Length: 320
Image 1 (cartoon, rainbow, N blue to C red):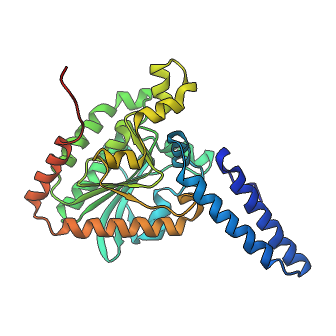
Image 2: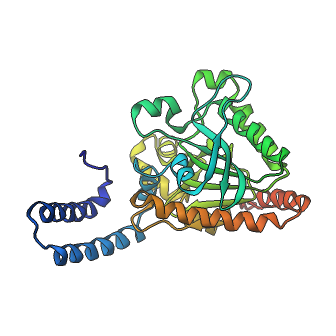
Image 3: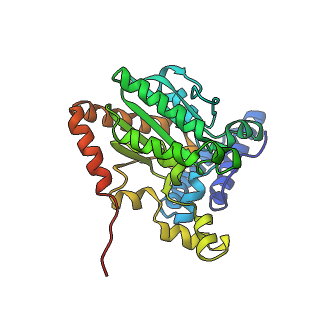
């Protein structure tokens, strides 16, 4: 089997896991008892994971949010939804596979689920444009939101993108207008709407499906106006300063909760969501169900007033 990818700061975790795998393989081949050694190594592994993931720097958080084995939207759909019916196309240009969406049943409740989707290999990444949507992706998302509004069903969006696609075709077809139009229409959508940042939420590409009543973030997700590399390139003229940029941007889930932008941080399994997809999906499903239950009790007019007030209150400034 190919070696699973791991980050630099995960090296010691990976080494202990490799030792455990080798011992178990030896036990299978030679029929010897290695349970005591394995138990000791597993305890050490758990302790090391806890220590490592409790003390991540902002840039390390960014790397975890981008981990190639982190679960994506369709991985969560498979684990938390029943009766998933994917819908396609914006009815204007084409179907943008960087954004997926459709009807689903979450813990007995019918929802419209929309999310950004990356690929697992180069072929799929080219098809899904690495999770960076074109204008037609945002127009498809809005079409599905309006369909949910028509039938009085809540909307859930899963955010995971390095940003909207800035290419020539994207600009020609109005990427800025498509995102801006979504912001306005989501602000007045007359059904509950919840977003969860499951990986990286960058710039307007994330906000294009992110104007919602509740903003949830997975523990190791990030949400920012710009990537650390982009920020460093602008301020320091070099991506080498990305660690300083990541710290200044305050883009972690804890930072955004403290700033009042994120409403809830959803815990991840020890070692990150990529370490245990099923556990991560369970935590996310519970958080979404809890938020949907709360919002279902709020009259629509009050819901819209609170949504406007939420975004009015975001940010801080001072006059000199």
